[in-house]
Image 1 (cartoon, rainbow, N blue to C red):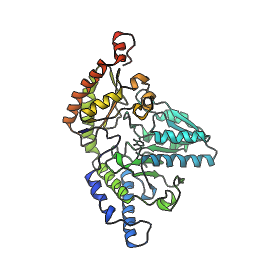
Image 2: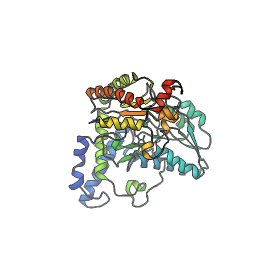
Image 3: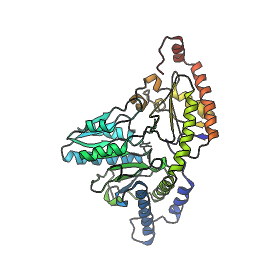
Image 4: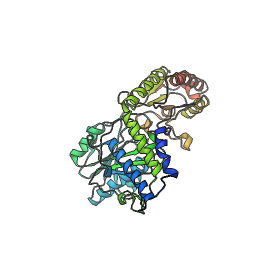
Amino acid sequence: MIYADNAATTRLSKTALNAMMPYFSEIYGNPSSLHTAGQEAAEALAEARETVAGCIGCLPKEIYFTSGGSEADNQAIISAAVLGERKGKKHIISTAFEHHAVLHTLKKLEKQGFEVELLPVGSIGTVTPEQVKNAIRPDTCLVTVMYANNEIGSILPIAEIGAVCREKGVIFHTDAVQAAGHLKIDVKEQNIDMLSISAHKFHGPKGAGALYVKTGIPLTNIIEGGAQERGKRAGTENIPAIVGMAAALKEATDNIDKNAKKVAALRDKLIDGLSKIPKSALNGDPMNRLPGNVSFCFEGIEGESLLLLLDAKGICASSGSACTSGSLDPSHVLLAIGRPHEVAHGSLRLSLCEENTEEEMDHIIAEVPKIVERLRSISPLWKDLESGKKQFVL
Ligand SMILES: *Cc1c(COP(=O)(O)O)cnc(C)c1O
């Protein structure tokens, strides 16, 4: 099997697994307990916090552990909204192609009277610091812009956007779930006030994440209960997962240049090969791009059929379109970069990691064109395009 869906989730690394093992059955105390067993767990928690902080350039006390990227996004945005509301500031700036953890949280705030402005992301899928600067108003309480897009791989100018927000005194949050462990992050240098990460996107376990919050920004609880995470996130800590996250992030950060170089070479080989398919187009920023992201649209086919046929050939990939989840709407990300509905439906995302090989890329490059051709040969839409009844877009 070829696994090329690392943007959805990654394999747990051996290092992370080994680090986690003792915390399931040997060191199983509750970190809130005062006895030795509890204090051993508390020590592991403190050490993990220090490790995660070290990997992104903040203080340990600026790290809050969560159940993942979604929770971190929710808590960051809601906290900034609560602060804004107290000052009568209810304008929030974000982008049209954020993850649903951000977009749906913003939708909820809209229903509570907040004004949410989603910046357009243009045809390559990015926003400029100028766009952010021009959108900031006296009543803006938050700018939330993702570090890198999960579907099309564009990397955004986070440090520059951070600088604009810092200058204007507006809280800046970034969903860095696709960036952490893959791109260098330094929250101080990059003027970031809040940042979300998720362990399972960098070979850590599922169900663990972290929110960095700059000292001085008060968080609002979204889960009430005990006094864990300095009273800001109740619930007994998932010690094995937190330890695994720290180990995985450290490993990824230590090898970041080596891995990025290797993965980007695989990515470029794949992009080169798939670009030869007629009526195809690469999605996302061709220059500032996640090392592992390959995203294409192929005209005249359905992404779902492509995925199923690839799966039958042992290739695990993903499509942006959401037909499988019961909706006929294609991906909001592909629509945001201006792909028409029928083109957005023919999308394919292959997301790579350092475990992938050149041979695997050769295999994908050999299979995808055959499957695209086969699907086109039975597609009524393709027939209309070829006969000139409909116009090609790509
Ligand atoms: C995966 C992902 C999330 C959600 O993270 P979970 O840990 O799965 O909740 C949020 N944002 C982006 C960009 C992601 O890729």
